[in-house]
Amino acid sequence: MTDFDIFAREEVTKILLELGIPANLQGFRCLQECSLKVIEDPTLLRKVTKRLYPMVGKVFAIDGGVVERSMRHSTDIGFCKTNFKPLCKIFGMSEEMLNYKPTSSELIALIAEYVRFNAQKQGLEPNKKD
Image (cartoon, rainbow, N blue to C red):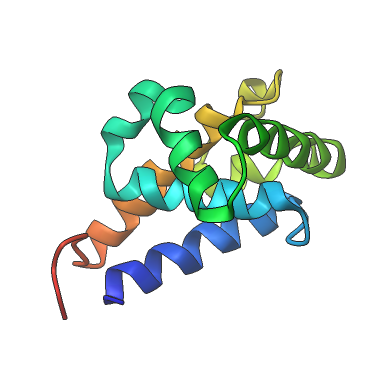
């Protein structure tokens, strides 16, 4: 595991916990894995239901539809707990942007881009072996 991989996993986990998504739910692990896969390959966002969710489903031995449903359930719980106000703090968004709950794919894209950006600021590259 590279420094980038460790950094990415820690950042994704920290963000999901700050958003109030319970770590004991299957959706937490699915969101975590989806975010990490999108950090590695942003093109996966083009076909989330056809490529990304089934790919993550294989990791956990579940169907792609179950991945989608478990992530939706987890984000619903996180949204109910925090109204996703930590999004403002973490990503520098205005509270006016919180009029709706982001979809799972929107949340995955936001987390992936944020982590990728912060990794680059620290000089960490996805394929760079340390």
